[in-house]
Length: 342
Ligand code: SP5
Ligand code: ZN
Image (cartoon, rainbow, N blue to C red; front, side, top):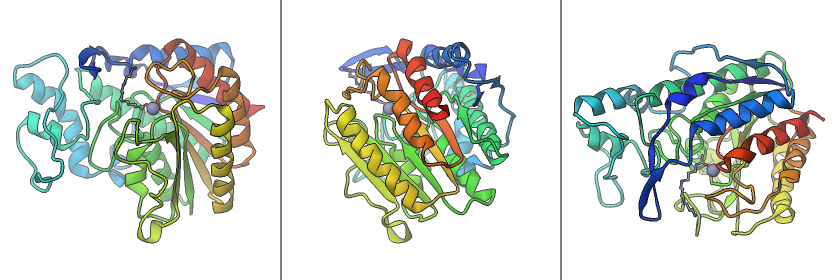
């Protein structure tokens, strides 16, 4: 399997995060991608290739154009306003406030285009976002070109980013971009299988009213886990999309037995749907030692995930999402990929 990777991810570095009442260095750090890249090499998964640059047209197929155009302006506007550190909003248009009027200042716009304080910008953030997007599209092109699978080693991740908002370490929804790109290239149906520990609220929002992209999400129950406000089992899609969004919320402490039963059910529904391509939102924060998560998957479980996905027999694009137990991210993520290739 070929891996697409860009060193430009590394410029998205040193951003802060609010955890338990304190400001700490972000869990979503450059070493994550470097551990995965090193493991791809040591396991000899296949060649590691740079992305091809793309314009932003494919991003605007799933995101609002004004949102995408805003992203490259964030750091320059922040600097112009005389500040350093991390560019982050602090006011959000929640219930009772106006989300239909676009404000003007950088502080207001950062809140307007986000749903949490989890997507701070630093100087290199836009270049990293753009490279992650290019990585996803370049890997999708390999699959479209006839490869059985490809690995988009994306950083930053994408599945929390919705049509017009960032959050949860995510800015452009790389998996959603790739799924829509497959559709635009002639695929009639595409499935997104999201195995990240957190519910992929952005992906769900983007495709919620559509029957041509099936979204299956396995995750920590939002009653007690981030992102809290989406990801319940009764969210099944709307209108034409009814029945094409499927959520598997699971309790804290979930281990392989329960997780794999949900995965089995998701794979059966995916097979019934009969897509032309599969996009896997590959998070490995389900790992027992993940510092921000509550599932109990073990390193030996990850190849089994890959083997099950391989049995679908469909062209498959793996898109890197979360995973914060940095030293084990590479072992577990590449474990899924080598399991797929067996
Ligand atoms: C892509 C992805 O995995 N995004 C996850 C975003 C999670 N943001 C919330 C983090 C909450 C951290 N809570 C720390 C608890 C430590 N015991
Ligand atoms: Zn996650």
